[in-house]
Image 1: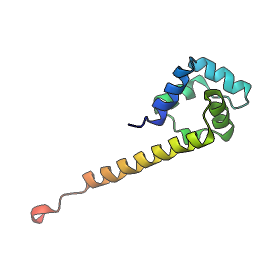
Image 2 (image 1 turned 30 degrees about the vertical axis):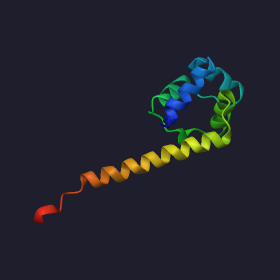
Image 3 (image 1 turned 180 degrees about the horizontal axis):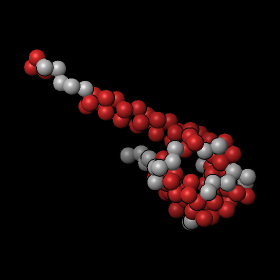
Length: 101
């Protein structure tokens, strides 16, 4: 099973023994500062990664040792899941046409 982007980012951070505050400090040093609040919301799914600036993505990837290909693959996976959920939700919200209804 593939991890969601939020779980994947958190796992990468923990694997490297970094705290959220470490990420904030290091991204700031790379001129792509991500605030503690933004990182927290990113890891809990309350902030869309597509809302990050290019400088923030670059800094975050450097700090977490993520290649651009890995980042893009994770974003693509998130988009696929979102599209599937949207289709499923639309199907469930349609009124039933069975039995002459």
